[in-house]
Image (cartoon, rainbow, N blue to C red; front, side, top):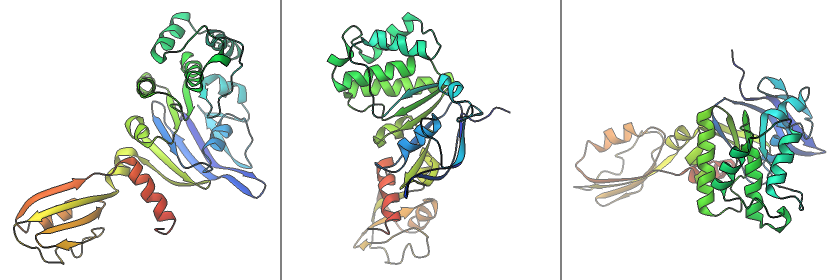
Length: 300
């Protein structure tokens, strides 16, 4: 049986009394783009550092391609293409020299045609010292070194930070292409429409704890929809009474309401009246994300 690409079991990291991540249980499949979402301080970067054995857990364990990340630290890093959220590069070498050196450190030989192909797609200025590049162009170098070795797993922390929209779109193409070729992609991002476009599943973390892990489509489908219905005649105020998750705000000849979860019972009830128009607002992942956090704050 093939092991998951990434697996954590009760993973915990504490910094004194502060919680970095608490009891994290995750399983990421090969050939999957997995989004890891949460605000600053939620535990995203801590989790990534634990997966790469850059820090050690207080309790629990993590495995990459079946290998314990603490016991097989070097082997794990050889399988991963990593873009850190806080990218630090040597200022004097060129991007070309940087990518070659990092590949050598990893014990790999990246074909020059592959480097050139990716550099062209990302618009990397290959022969200027890295120290002379803008932050966006340095980010491109970080992406280039992560993708160039065609790793078995990609771990990308805010991959499109500082990039212009065209390059952001190219990065999304690269992520989708990587998924088709088989690697798992573990993606931490604040750009929720980006996550919605490329991810198969997402985990949402808050203050070090896991809130949910769900398929993107299912997460959006089960969230709150806003509906506006126009009737031929004013409907009774209790038309949707008894339907769980359907909030109500009737007006003469119209109803504006919210629906959480399955919409079929609502449509069947509406069909009892003569309906002239139905408009439904499907939530974005960003709206779902914000709703989840408002719920955790008690609706504040």
